[in-house]
Length: 411
Image (cartoon, rainbow, N blue to C red):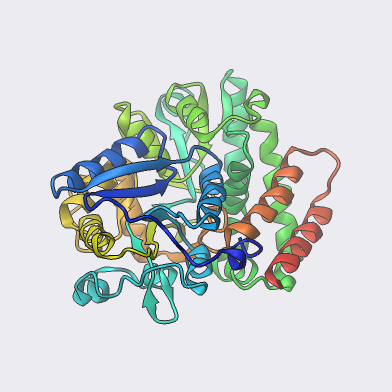
């Protein structure tokens, strides 16, 4: 991102249709698709046609590469799903509209959590509109398997490995896990947060403190992370999270580490929390909450009149009470507005909502909230290579990760 963005020329784009809004996103899975449909229908009622610019795969990485090429050509979409430090990267070069005045200030001040406002702010201005809050560090369990084997949800890592052995011995896959690098990073993030705790996690992955990045705790986190590999189905290499998530609810696997967007996928197929699956804290992670925030930015265009109207309509739609309610039920997330009634959300959403208020909150590095997409890409390579390799030690990969972070963060 840093190598590409400074080269982007002044935008010279064709005017968009007054009733059309082209939006780049990567919501292409079941659950994501249903949530997106809620948004499309809400806009259609106000005369705005949502034009899909959907990019599949890589947890948003593919979408960012395509967006960069569109921007380089001087023809970005009207809006794009961008999050975390990438918002500031685009704002630095003057490509984004400020959204401060689109919404009532009382909404920003009273009903949007501080950590969300910090994520979408650049030089004192709101540069993106937040939509939801996902929890990343979940452990999901197949209820039927746990009932059949009379297992209790693991709360410590020792309990986890004991449970995994019993599930495997019963002929099931102990740990459902997709074979892509971003999923490996999500898994490592959950392990690292449990070992480091919130403060050391932030020192390592937000502040890039080398004393923590190269510490014995980090080495221990990598060792534990690698132990999980023995429970993963080796045929899953290269397969994405949708397949891994479906394996859990199809009773092929006993456990899964994944953000609660998986719950959106299950909801779309009629699966029910506490009936088909259970949601619990990652072992040794009580009161620790790794968050991911979906947000949209709006690009400056040469012809602003219709674009400004569409932007205002989309902004007010995204944060309306009805959309916040309906969208997040389908997406598996919780509303970004704290004043939304979630009484008819499922048990896992209620747990997420309460844990968000009571836990130590940390931005997810695997989901591009703590790190830019460029740094995230370099971290993925190091972490995923280690997880799949038999030739790297925890000590070696700890040094490699620290070097990769230093090389990118100093640029």
